[in-house]
Length: 226
Image 1 (cartoon, rainbow, N blue to C red):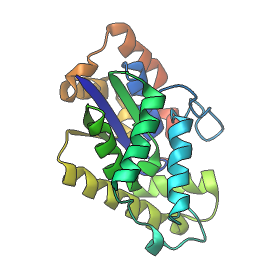
Image 2: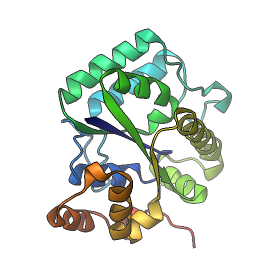
Image 3: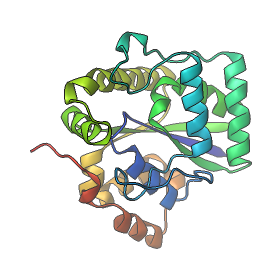
Image 4: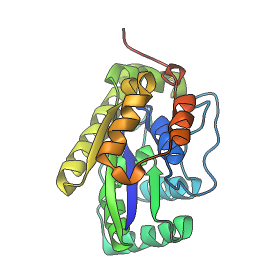
């Protein structure tokens, strides 16, 4: 059986750390991943082909992403039309080929979940979610460090994105594993155990688990509420 994991969460909520963990546990992320930088020292684990496509899809529809000048009233999920499903389906085939276990991470998925679920299902994938959660204040503080402005600039986007994610996950009724960034950063052993319980197809060797424990550490959380 082919399986796809969509890593969803607002920007700066730990989706990169989770996508890196899933890659270690055996999920194919494709090639040409966005490189590490000062904001994500261990990498973003975003496929640049998919990221560029998602960025274009939102821009073509005048749907703003995180932008200090944008109104949240203009932020809407993208409808899953047949033309759009077909476009994403072809991109996924190009990126992943016949891979049987894949993971996709891009915070823009919060506006594109319906389209990706449909495209993946048409390709024969059983779709799962990993939903990353983090204290809103910590997300906002991290956004300020990453993009400037003030926490109040980003809070409306964070609330809106999280609302879209939660609504879409409930709507599709698919397996969703909820993980907090704090728990991943502080107890990766328990998180891996829980993920393997909820997604048995990810059962890993001791060597892979040890690699996860070497990859994850508390320094990944740039901001943390007291």
